[in-house]
Length: 558
Image (spheres, rainbow, N blue to C red):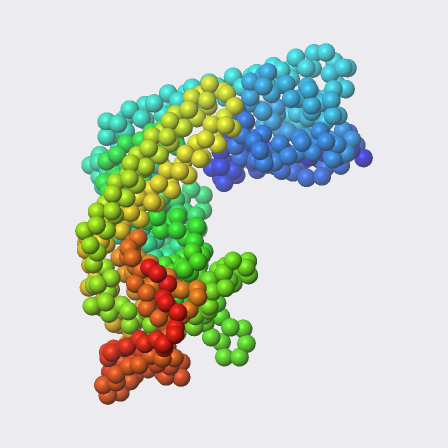
């Protein structure tokens, strides 16, 4: 028995989310009745949300293209049938574009396309039986293409009017283009009562990912913005990422993939520099597994800031037997790729060492940089800004070319690929600019260290008593990020290096076995866990002297 598949398509993701067209087309009654009358087995129903006028339904990886390729290759059995509501569900491309592959590849392979509403079967056999049928198919394809073309022209005219009004600064489509923290008052855009919540979300995004933020907001019962469809749906990480990447946060409107763009259109929620910092943090979490995951379980103060001297990232691991102990290890060593034989650091001892290095005097010495380093950082920031400007120009050109191709009805696969590459390059350039700007800010002393000093002192007191929390570790981690601190662990011997930005690494040995400290009264530390790594007196650090034995190899060169 030959087999049949039913196919449904709508033009946009919104149409797919709200049901409507897909639900109507998914009604298997007409398909089942046709199969019963014609001796076919109805195998499966599949669908797609995308423009058939622009050819996205036949793009690489699209389900309809995959089905056609299998059918032409004979993998779906003899005379497979594709059941569609009407011809325009199958294609809205120009007649010669759509009909060419059908006549040269699809129909010769025995494939049948069935118009369920009209009860018409298009196949090579039917064309040979009725000469008019092919002309009817071409007329249906042309009619669907003309309809989409007229609709596109009307939409283009509408968006041209929107573009002109936006350029004049008028309030346009307030329910559609404004983010949840912006409303309208007296005919003007204003920050509404949800702006403090939005600022909180952007601030948290510097520390944790969208999954953690969504979890926090849902746990607190914070209502999400009203959305189309089900208004009771909770905060989701996907929606939060879209809000975090919306340039409306610094006042810019950007629609139609940048074809409509105007700076200063909305009242800014945060500065452009703050927005760039958030984008850099998002990009870092995507690329660096060490900075991802549940930050409420942050176990290492230097999470996302620490690398091995071999150049690889590091991650926290836990021993699997006996008394469970946590360690910091090079990813290359852990993955056993054979490129690094780095030692493994006990996390509690490494934490004790790091906290002794973050005292006010040593931190001030670390952050303070010479004129040469500051000038180099400023130059890097300028070069990064130039790269962003060049990337933005390339992206604008790509968007313009894509828009022209869409309006001309040309194949857009190449233009979409170029646009995607340009968008990725622009995102990378902005991330590099944000990092360069943060380095300059730290070197010029604008970030300050007072808050970090207080956070380090609080963590040290709690750590010495065995009562430190993820929130305390996260606070210190955030302070180190603001200062642009880099942490490096040596692969060949126990040593930890600190640096700010691209500055020189300050190495010190993590030699807890030979550490000597001067006690002033009581040492409030759990010696069974930390050995001689740090000494405190009534919760305050006393003094630590790190020593090495004769014959120890030299520390890695900074």
